[in-house]
Structure formats: C-alpha cells, structure tokens
Length: 316
Ligand code: PEP
Ligand code: MG
Image 1 (cartoon, protein in one colour):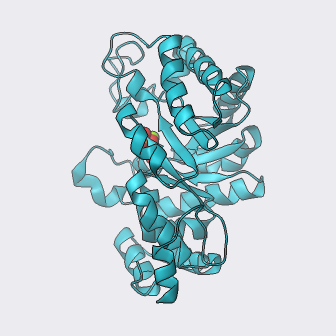
Image 2 (cartoon, helix red, strand yellow):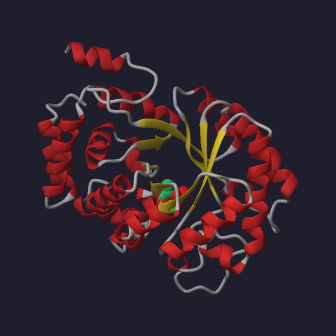
C-alpha cells in the first residue's frame, strides 16, 4: 500500500520500483494539442505526427510554413527531446499530391517512407525544414521514418537525414519484416520506435480501421508482444533505444509488460502518462519481466491480459 501511494504521487522521469529508467513521452499530432502536451510531465515528444501540415490541401506545404510549425513545437519543448516522424502519407492518410488514387490496397501500397521514393522532394523539403527549425531552438530533435520494411530503406533515410544535419535518426517498426530484422535496422540507425497500431495491422492481416476486427488488433496479442520482444532484444544487443509509440503504450498494465520485454521508452497521449508512470513505479524490472513472460506464454490477448492482471494482484 505504501508503494502504491508513493507511485500515485510520483512525478518526473519514468522508472520502475528499483530505478530502471523508462522514458515517458507524449504523442503530438496537431497544433491545438501543443499547449497541453508541453505542460505534461514528460521527457519530451516520442511521436510528433507531422501529417497535419499536409492533410486537406491540394499541394505540399512550403519550407517556410513547415519551419515555423516545427519551430513552435521545438520551442515549447526546449531542453527536452522531440522525435519528429516524417510524413506518413497514404493508406488512411491519402494526399492528393503524393498518393496514387488507383491502388487496390492502399494499406499495402505506396505509403509512409515509400512515398519518399516516388516524391523525393517532399522528404528533402521536410528534413531541411526540421533541421533549420532545430538549429534555432533548444530542443533535442530526433527524426524517424514511418513504414520501414527493409534495412536498405532505413540506411537511405539515415543518410539523407544526416546530410541535412540531423544527427539522430531512427526507423519505425510497423511491419513484421522490420521487427524480424530489427538488428539490421539497429546497425544503420540510432534508435527504433515500434508503432504497435500498424504492427498489429500487418502482423494479423487485420485492417486497423475495422472495429469488427478489434480482437485481432488487441495490443495484448501474444504474437504482437513477441515482435516487440524481438525488436527490443535486437535494439539492446546494438545499444540502441527501442520505444513504443502506438496505442499500446497508453495501457498502464501493458506498460509493465512492455518494460519487461525490454522497451526503453513509452510515448502516449499526455493524459495517459500519470497512470503509466504510477504503474511502472510499483514494479521492479524483474517483476516486469515475469509479467512479460506470462503474457508471451498466453494463447490469446484476453488470456494474456487476465494472466498479467492476476499476477499483478489488481494493483493497476
Ligand atoms: C502506429 O502505427 O502505431 C503509429 C504510432 O503510427 P500511426 O498510428 O500514426 O500510424
Ligand atoms: Mg503507423
């Protein structure tokens, strides 16, 4: 009970009961979210979705407009880290100037980083704007690419970002192939960030927009957790941080499991962080590993959650 009360009152950097650090960061997706995101007790932005700049318009935003938008975010997070996710166009976020209208399966089409191959200018303009905004502010700016499938894509992205003067470059792990080759991704970039929303969609061949498939898309699915485990282990073997920035990071009980799987940061909506921080503070790293083992061994998502909740003693 004492441990629980201390956890409820906890603030500052995320850590387990025995002091193992887990960075707690916020997801940011639109300018109107900035004030609340910056005010939240966090170590920065773990996922800055930049699509808002591009959606609902006929042509891409210019360099100056982008620079100004990024500058506002970086200034609000001066002294903290901001992980910028480059444009994730296509699939559920089609753009008239970047997305082909005739793809039979847009979720399997030219989306995310794949767009940059067809439209290299889009990515270069964005990287230049991010780099320039970063130079004039005090934030620790990292960049990462969405929808990386093979190491060569991550290498090419890292080269381009570094050429623009952005030193810390990552790959999102949202495709099962990327999780299975996470070690090779970790060799060519500085960090990995797992997008559990898309990783679940592609691992289970289940459209993330379909509510009727929610069971398959449940982040407690042991097969999804296994992909997280492999990614975290590969990152650790290469000394690279591995974050989770999909919806899974917002669940306090699952946060303990993810920590036990080796994830080093969690990024979620600002309002979710206090409960995640409190949950982590009640558990040692070894206890998190035990919970992770229970989840991995379960036959399905409901059984995984039930087993972990029972072992956790109903404290979250
Ligand atoms: C994800 O896929 O989990 C993710 C964080 O990216 P988005 O939800 O923006 O696709
Ligand atoms: Mg995604």
